[in-house]
Every structure is written in C-alpha cells, then in structure tokens.
Image (cartoon, rainbow, N blue to C red; front, side, top):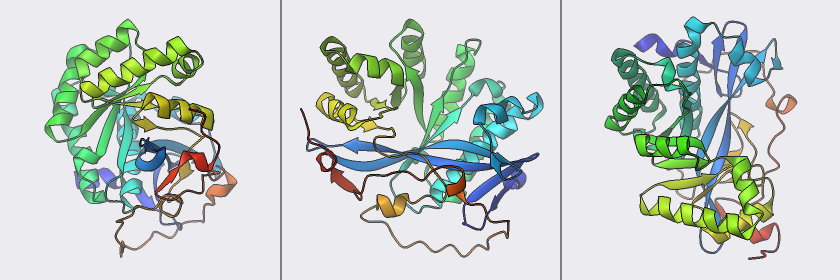
Length: 309
C-alpha cells in the first residue's frame, strides 16, 4: 500500500499536487464556519475541491472528470481525496475538519470498500489528522445499491470517519438517504435553501428541520451563501454550519486561511521533508484569491453590515 501516494508531490509553494496523465491536480479548500448566538464566526472545517490544470492552464473540473478512462475512475477518485487530506494536514490546524466527496458506486465489492477505507486512513495518518476530523460526503447515484451504501458507511464508521450527505432537499429520495445512512452532517441543496429563505413560511420550515436534525445529533450545513443578508437569516434560524462566497471563496493550497482565520491555539509547525523542485505555479493567475472578510479566528458578522434580525 506504500505506493498509493506515488502520484503525490510538492510544488514550489509547498502545496501537495498530484499527476494524472497530462493533468496536474490541485486542491482548493473552502472554509465552513459556525456562528454563535452573538453572530461570532469560527472556522470549523474545509471542503476539498479539485482544480485540474493542463499545460499550465486551469480546466473545468467537469472537463477533467469526463476525460478519465473508466478503468481509472476509482483510482482518481481516491487520489483526489488523498490530495485534499495532505493539503489540509499541511495547514497544521488542530481542530478543523475536512469534507471530501465520495462516489461509493466506484467501490462495490467488500474488498474494494475495505481497501479504499484503508487508503483514507493511511492518508489521514500521514497528514496528522485523526479519522474523526474527516467527513466523507456521500454522493449517491440513482443505480447505487442501498446494501452497498450501507456496507460502505459501516466500514467508514468502524474506522472513526464521519458521514455527510449532500444536496438535501426533503424529497422522498433525500429522506430515504437520511434513514439509510444516518449521517453526522447534512448539506442542504443551495438553490432550495435560497428559495425558502425568501419567505416566512419557508424560513419557518427550515428552522424546524435544522432543529429536528440537531435533536438527532445531525448538524445542518447551508452552503452557497452569496451575501451577508443570507448569513444573517441563517443566524436567526440557528443554522450550525455555513459555507459560501459571502464568507470565504475557495483558495488553492497552500491557501492564506491560517493568516486570515488563525486558530487560537495553533502550534508552530515545522516540516523538514524536502520539496520537489517543480516549475513555479502561481494560483493567483488562475483562481482569484478570496476577498475574505478581515476577521481572524472569530469575528462578528456585523463588522460587514448592520444586522437586521
């Protein structure tokens, strides 16, 4: 299993990158925040997003994934997760969690499931992250077997990983996923949330759902928040976790997030492993740096605009 990370290497910025054919894969990390009763925001987690490049030019993730040979899809899916884990671990934060996407349909046998979970476990150990800091976001396809999904989640839980489901919209299939997977986190479908936030009846329903999930030990995540008015609404609804451009945009690793949102008890990290000498890659040419709020580890939202609630 030692060779599973052979496609990973470090660039001149000390960020981990991975190779697949003509592509170089980069991690973009987007913060996820909590908000307390006073509107104070604290960085709680990151979501890992793949940013592929070819010949030094960024390409759309959809274009990259559609180009992958069917025989390599499971390998690349696994490689992307390891890349995000390594780059998040390199930040040296002690508490921040990481959300990584999963396509369980790529791992359908018991042996494949066990092997993939072992890979994640090894990556987490190498990156200095405990399994409970990694939330595996299950993306379910229509033809995925319920039995296979259950076995996959059972194996992940056995090793201490957290479970999340995405694009929850309270439809029948979403409720079935919730019942089957019993997740720790539920990401609400962004467009659905935005629509419901715009009227009092919809907001009331969201409040009820968020509270019901909390009573079951499930934390709701509202993503795709694009303005501070929506953040204020989430504060009024007591939404546990928030994500979106209104708070912070994704940044290519190594990111500026330790400077923008420092962890109060963050230790000094020294990594003596040598960097691989590569042609310099400048993230600012391809993905604009976040126009991040100027708050540090915690700051009131009202610093950006007057609270209306």
